[in-house]
Amino acid sequence: MLANGFHEVPTGKLAMVVTHLEMRIRADTRPVQTPDGIGLHPIENITVDEYRDLYRRVGEDWLWFSRLNMSEIELSKIIDDPKVVFFTLMKNGVKHALLELDFRTAGECELVFFGLTKELIGSGAGRYLMNQAIDIAWNHGITRFHVHTCTIDSPAALNFYIRSGFTAISRQVEVADDPRLSNGWDTSIAPHIPIIQP
Image (cartoon, rainbow, N blue to C red; front, side, top):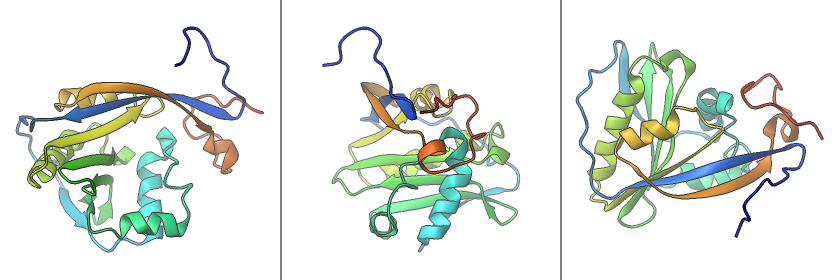
């Protein structure tokens, strides 16, 4: 058990508070109009390179790194699994969102990744996409829909999930390498999270 008080985080590392949330009963969704010029599209037969490009464009500002640290073989096993499905929001022929739903555990769906590119943030597209996610997940006959978010993600994410009908059920602290240092990313990414140099 983690003792009360301050705990030193090694230089070059990130420390995140991860909140796990779940939805045990399908949440009511308030109707929202489809944002102008945007359409929901399933992504089928996505390649590793296509996935990484979309993942990076959606999540880089929030230091999404877990899938970028996977080998091509590890990532292929996930994205090629028929029980893992992907959707995006298209605008002018370009993918601007990542919705990844994992049905590999019987009776459950994990909302693995949910995000928009900068171009769609603030447009109402997030609420529209969440409504679609809830419908898709619960139409599979599940009894549990779950997600987790952390303190280096968008500061709006946790309350957005709660407003969408998820309930917080547990909390963890995760420590990981800062990808701006370990993976050689542009150090100007995610300026809201200062880099602590080794």
